[in-house]
Length: 193
Image (cartoon, rainbow, N blue to C red; front, side):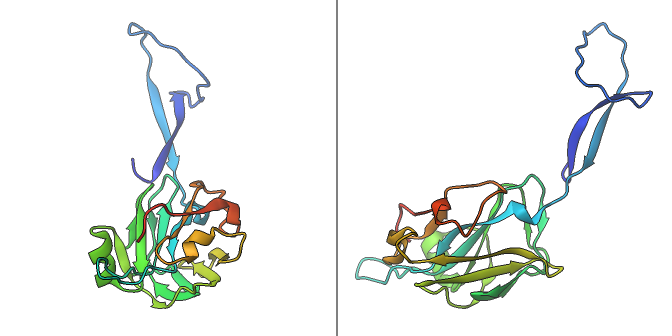
């Protein structure tokens, strides 16, 4: 069931079974044991940052800034009230939920984003601008706890191709131990956007 995780089996006397093998002829009554899955803010990561989009040419549409969040946990998260407080400004509205493994985007220009990328879950438009030289990004949860606070950069340690106009920064690590501030955890995308 969503919001719960399987823990194991227990006998009717309440004792948990470590490891058991049964045959079809055994007369055994067991109870499945579940416990609530608790979402951890560590399960929410920035999976892509388009901070230096391409310019329009005769054959292409101009790119658009965006930031993609991914739920790398196994529990749905309600993003209502989560807010970016540095770098860009944005507050997620009521009803914004992120299923396990799902992504959601916030962008500087929703119309242009939809034109370029089609149907991708977009939570809305942020105010401000993602700086091409890099900057600090801070996301707070609905109780004002820091979810993440890190700076991306365009220095030689970070993937320089992402600062050439059209390639984004993409994470190469999709687990809750992801360190946003470590440039080794990022690469330039392979597709212009």
